[in-house]
Image (cartoon, rainbow, N blue to C red):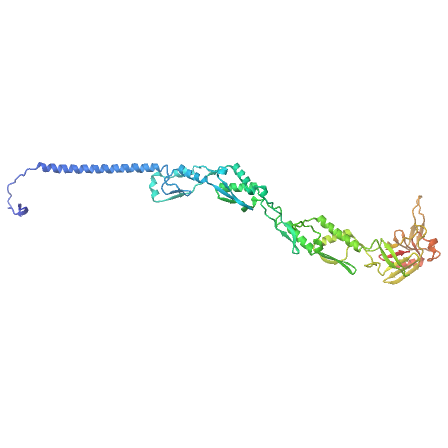
Length: 512
C-alpha cells in the first residue's frame, strides 16, 4: 500500500502485488549532519558529567582526608573529658582548661572549737601537671572515624595530676588558728569522783590540743585528693588524747575499791559501849581537788587509819592509867597500873582495819588487844582480883565478888627503897614449885642471898608471892623491921593454898 497525503493527512492506498519501479531518493546531507552533531553533543555532556562527578569525589576525599587530618590533633565532636566539653579541642587546650580550674582551688579547714579557715591554691603554689594521659587518649582516637562524633558521645575520666609546695603548706597549717598554742585546750584525763553517795568515773575531755604532724598529713592528703574541705575533728589522731580514759581498767578497779570502801562498816565493842566506823567517816579520809577529782594517796589514807586506831587506844586503853579503887576496909585509894588493863595492839589493829575497809567488810567486833582486863569501864578490875593492902599487911582473893582466900602477909622493908614493895596493878607472870630465890650477883660471882622456897608466884619482875617459914609471924608491924626484899611473904600453908587457886589473868592490886 501507498501513503498519500491529502490536505495534511496521510491516507493509505492499496498497491498492486506486482512490484513497481524502484525509485532512489537522494540523501539530504543536512539531515545527516544534524544526527552526527547530536551524538557528539551527548558524548560531550557525558564526559562533563563524569568529570564533574570525579572532581566531586576527589574533592570529597580531600575534604574527608583534611578533616581526618584535623581530628588527628583534635578530639571528635561529643567528647567530654573530666566533665569538660573537649569537642574540636587539642590535648593542650583541654589540659589548659583543666589547669585553669586549678588556679581557683581552695580548701576549707574545720577544727574543734574554731571557726573554719581556708587555704588557697596560690598560698601553696598549687598547680596542674600534665601526665600525658590526655595526649595518649587523643592518640587512641582513629581520625578517619571522625564522622562518628555526630552520632555518639564519649565521656572520659583521667587522673588530674597536681603539685604544691609542701613547705608552704606547713607554713599555712602552722598559721591556722587551731594550730596556735594560745587557742588550744589540753585534754583532761578521766578520773574518779564521789557523787550521789557513790564513786563514779568522770569521762575524759577531748580538748583541742592539735597533733601538728597528723593535722598536716590529713590536710595534705585532702589536697592530694582535691577535696574542697577537711574536718580535723573527724580524725581523733589529729588531736592529743587524754592519757587516762573512761575505759581504764585501773580507774574501774579504783571505783570498785572505793565503792567497797564506802560500804565498810566496822562496829567496835568495848563492853556495853560501841564505836562505829562507817563509809561517811572513811570518805572524809580521802583527798579531792577543787573539781571533785579523787587524788589517790595510799600513804595518807593509811595514816588516817593509823590515827583512827591511835584515837581508839587513847579513848579506851587503860594500861598506864590510874584507877580509883575501894578497898576491903572501905578506903578509897588510887592505883596506877602499867602492867594490867586494856591495850589495843595498834599495829595489828591498823592492818586488820585497813584490810576490812578495802574489802568493804561490815562487822561487829572487839579491837585487836595486846593486853586485856577483866572488865570494861572506869573500873576494869572487875569482881575477880587479888587485893594486897601493904599498910594493913593483909591480902584477899576475890572471885566473882566473893572472898576465896585471905591471909596476913609480910611485904618489903619500907625503910629501904631497894626493898620496899612497889604499889601498882599486876598479873601473875609464872608459877613454880619448888624454886630458889636469889639476890643480886656479887663481884665474886655469888649471890647476895639464896633462899629455897616451896611455892613461887612472881607478878612484878623479881617480886612475887612465896612461902616464908623463917618469918616468926605475919601481919601487924613485922614488915617494919623484918620486911622482905620486896616480895609478899606468906605462911607456908597459905602459900600452898594460893598456889592452887591463883590464875594468870587475875589483877593483883598492891597499894598502901
